[in-house]
Length: 559
Image (cartoon, rainbow, N blue to C red; front, side, top):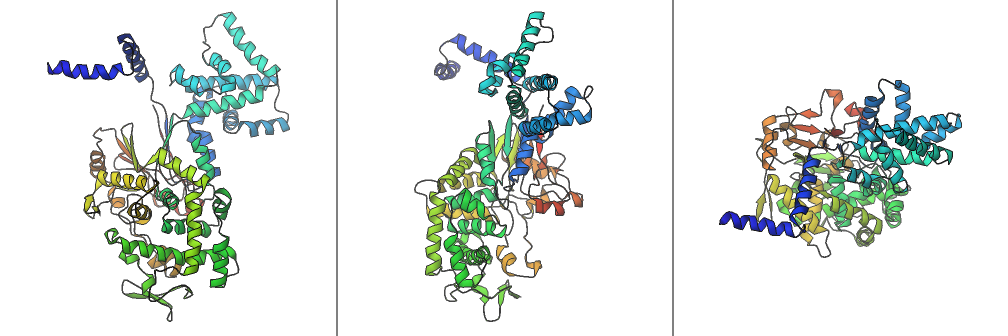
């Protein structure tokens, strides 16, 4: 009797979507057939850091997937040079054809040969998918023609062979071959990757994160695991003033005024004029940087005082500055400052903004909260992103799972309740989403800054030393202690503990981790914990390449 009730429950659910038992059977047949197809290729990218050109190149070559397929098909028939030429054509079809035309390398024979090569490659890549899925990926203008060509068979009769040859010849005769090659190249790149994982940090020191997001918004299938730099911009759009100041500081420091003013319409004019007036600096960018840094540490101080539960009182350094002597007291030690010019610092209330600073902050706040293009991009990060993802038996996150020195999941207490492990990630995700609503609480908006720079934040996992790096010459004070997670994650049992925490017990499950560069120059390897954890940092940040000894790593997961 109980079994009949259970069956009835499922039958009622099926009835909502299927009109008859035959419709259910057809769907079961369809799904069963799909499960016998090879798994689509997953592509993992991390730490793009606003470097659009490098990102675009990797997206075009699909991190070597296309070259691999070209070698499989043409390894015995084309020279290495010709295979590379074909790859370049697929990556940059319009540019490559322009170059070839300039040296008279393009004629009807070249078109015929190239079109056949591209169709062969598209056939191989489409073999992982159902016809329905391939049809949805076809460029609209050439959908029917490409569909016909993709499903041509080796053993076709003479009429069919003639038919397919005539299609290609007509394309060439009508001078449409260039556009058709572009369409096929686009399809090949589309089929090469079934799903894209962006494992955090679209934003940072590079100046073109906006272009990267524009490209991602048109991508066919992806998810985003938020990074600390992403959450910083998200916090700024939520109206967190400390996040706003951090965003401005970072972009001024790396000379990326364009992304603020041109890409997102955030004017820095008032900040520059204020900095030039108060700090006596003629260069507008350097003046703005001097002013925003002081505003930043004031606002961070206010936030830390509102939230003792963050455990970040050691970051309250403005109150320990001795302007007369030019020192700051750090953990009981007097340390010489780079400058003692703090014209807006009130000794009685060091974390209070001056009236001029407050006026500037109000203008900046409005720009970040109401900027249309910025908020379009931030909404995309919320819609496609999260603190972590479990996908195809893999656990994906940007930063770390905070632990103590013994490798035990560390606690963070929020509003009287303590969280660790997966529960910590879940509450962080919940509060981040609550901060980007019409009427967020101050607590949720404040928490966005903690996610950016908190030692127990899963997105950060280190003691951030921004003040020391900005104001102290002695680099020994710059060292940012990392969470013990980063020394423990070489151990297989530790990684298995994390996988179990997130409900993954399969022996083939892995952790995909971004955030930290792999120092190949020091013998580090991206594969750790007996292949249970993969560290990927795309190496897009050029300044890091000298210290890592390598451009970086991406990850391909295919069948």
